[in-house]
Image 1 (tube, rainbow, N blue to C red):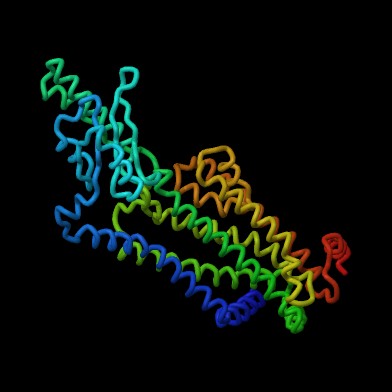
Image 2: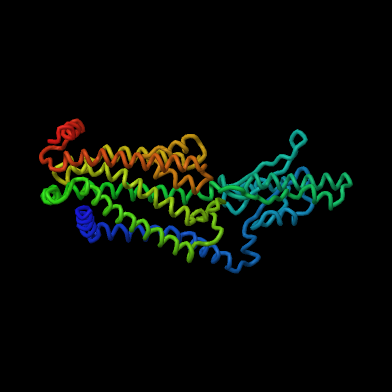
Length: 417
């Protein structure tokens, strides 16, 4: 125990003072805080625009010309009231050419020629460019309602009944479970944060071991303590550094969310909220970070032990990187379908579970058996990988020279030489 604490203390003190750790922590906090402040800035800009006084001339600075062959427009005020920002002018066929020229010259002018085709209302729409003028789908509804109102009035239907017929159906939405779309962006953020933390600190474990082999510090450590205590001590030290960074980001996010994030904010109609971040979820997030980091740290430690200098770590850790990236993209690709078989598989398979299960919990109600199975398999796999990694690490840690292959590692672990 004493040897493991010694390795832990040495590694922790060495890494926590590095500029790369301090700068990366500060940058990640700044990025998260800035991202959470963006909605508040958008709302501030939008509210500033809304508060600007608008004259009647400013609100009617565009012209909607209409040539009505059917006679559905009895009162242009009705159409003008439905087309916010447009002044309506009724023209006849003699004005068509001049009005069409106006629509070609400026997006401030549009023309609709209403006619009848096979017993239904039809109109030709003239704009300068696609996207200018009122949306045609909105115009369809407006013309249909005006025509329907006129036909009902001609048939002797009262205004009260006509209004009831044309009124849109309203509804209240009562959500029983979690809103998948409202948790989509937070789920992506959590998945990315866990991947970066787990992979980055696993890589640092490999770098730390390779660097100490270069300086021959490892020979002193091996003579004073067991290899198992070295790899566990280093992994715990790196894990604690990662945990401190993760918690710093989470605390900064919570504080920023409480202070600056607007209530009921939506992005393009998509409601975004962080109500899923409960105390229970915090425990789940921390547990998956610890197990996920431990799993990848054990493998990374072996990769660091197979090389003789820090420059070769990138090559040695490539298989670990491939597994981590594939597992992450598997989990990421199923975020939008959290109840699909693929998402369930991604949250149960140990190598992808740390990147998938915390995100799924934000998106949907995960069955208890899935959580138990996921956590149990991840814990067992981490333990088995630790046993295997410590044995391989013990065989490779004092190797100097060329990079060890997997077959060489297995042979050394069996012979003990």
